[in-house]
Length: 77
Image 1 (cartoon, helix red, strand yellow):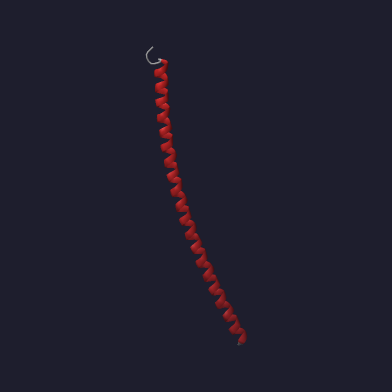
Image 2: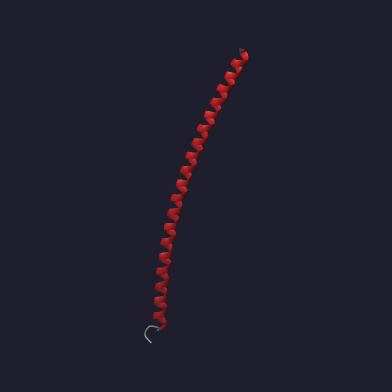
């Protein structure tokens, strides 16, 4: 009988450990998902900023090209 009691206690303890491990893995998975969401948001913001910077650079290039052509008299020949 004592062997059965010890075996039961061991099974019960193992069951609790498995439940704890399962809950911990679930928490880790949720934390990783939240981290992935934050990374995606940061990447989207960065892509938007890069696009805006590219548009500004293109506008500056166009203005510089215009004034360079104007200064060289290229449009009035």
